[in-house]
Each structure stands twice: as structure tokens, then as C-alpha cells.
Length: 185
Image (cartoon, rainbow, N blue to C red):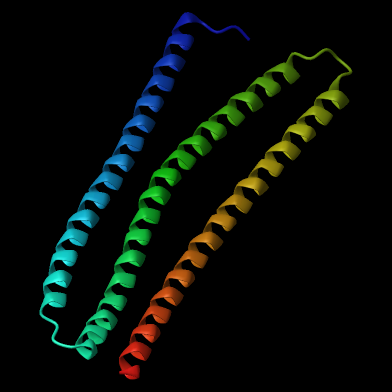
């Protein structure tokens, strides 16, 4: 199979466009991460200022304990929200890269299968069994690859579900701890 200069140029152009698209997506993910961190830092600074002013207006230990208890739940919720947004940014960027890779893999598989079919047509007489065995091996490899892709997708879904469960549990425990703290007074 000989490639023409036009085919090589077209392939290089497509690869460059893919690289630029992936680079832009990576930068967009970094930009989202920076925006998230800046917003979080601003909110933390504002919260610290408000909490400091509230602590300076406390008159006794009971009031201080009540103030501390009231700050615990919102802090836990903010940490969970930050982690959730961080996960969404990473997941969104990663899924874009995965989808792109799967698309290129599918194209490569089609091209390889076409090349095998072309080679089979031009194979010498009597090589039908060898060609059939080769095609069977290719199909088995493709099936194994699809199984791995499905397993990775399932593992990703399980990890996402576990993260949700963990954050919900953390919020419930933070709420329980805050309630217990206010009851002790």
C-alpha cells in the first residue's frame, strides 16, 4: 500500500487539527480550574473576614461555641462543592480526550480492516485458511479492546457514584456533628 503525497499531507493536516483541538480543550480545562480556584479564594477571604468580625463580637464562651458550630456545616458544604466542581472539570476534560482517542481508534481499525481485506483479495490461491485465521485474530483483538473500553467506562461510572456517596455522607456527618455541638451547650 503506497501513500501519495496528498494523502500524507491530508493525514498530517488532520493530526495537526486534532492536536490543536486537544490543546485548546486542555487549556480550557486549566482556565476553568484557575477560575474555580480564584472564586474559591475570594469566597474564603470574604468568609474569613465575616467570621473574624463575628468572633470579635462574641461576648462569652457559649456564644463562641455556638458560632463555631454554625461555621462547621457551611464549611463542609463548600469543601464538597469545590471538590465536586473540580471533579466535573477533570471529568469533562478527560472525557473529551477519551472520546477523541476512541474516534481515532475506530478510524484506525477501519483502515486496518480495509488493508487486510485488500491483502486478502490479492493473496495467492490456497491461502484462504491463513487469511481467515488472521481475520479471526483481528476480530478477537477488537472484541477484547471493546471489552476493556466497557470495563473502563463501568469503573469510571462506579468511581463517580462512589464520589457522590462519599460527599453525601460527608455532608450528613458534618450536619450531625454541628447538631451535636449545638446540643452540648
